[in-house]
Image (cartoon, rainbow, N blue to C red):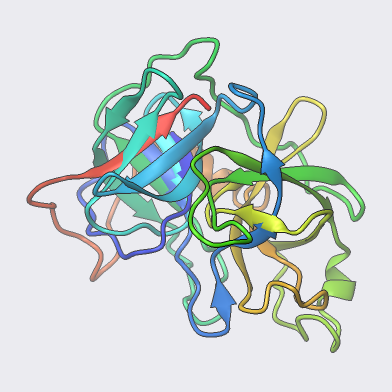
Length: 270
């Protein structure tokens, strides 16, 4: 399973083998990436996945299972590619959006992608688990992706960013997000200004586990009073585990339909 994020709408097929977790891209005053970061060491994040649209990177994700990826809501014509030097590429068998997703508030902004095949695990291709409990304010975490750089354009190499979890009550006060942050969201502050993908995993803890998935930031990424926001994977743990075991069940209206030429791919092993 892969946990990730994509920025264009995806036509979904029925859920079966291989899945991923995603979050719908924000609109209007929101944008799906954060600014700041540095190049990651090769193979230091073997759970990272590149979700690609017609061969071009669209967003990042995290490999939760050999057949599932997690992220924000993706787009049609996309695929999953796994591996830094010797890549495995997979079409998407099915996409399972969270049934409680609200486009207006961005609550429950998660999607699981089921892959057509199983990822071959190795030293450079590994699964990552979910964090056991919600990270407290001040917890040191990290974010990784291939988002926009300071001078424009996507980074050709995986970038990482050190961040710290912020207090939700503070994040919700009138100077910050003014009540827009739901209990199922996590605010965090980056130590550097760089970039990371929507749908990229917020990773915390000594053993590196997924605490959340980057959902949105302010359009003005330099605004210190509008910190980036992730959807909590911990608060959605029961839904994630149930979906990994059973698949989607009944797909959401308006988001079903087999793609004629599946080209949504995930690339793993970075």
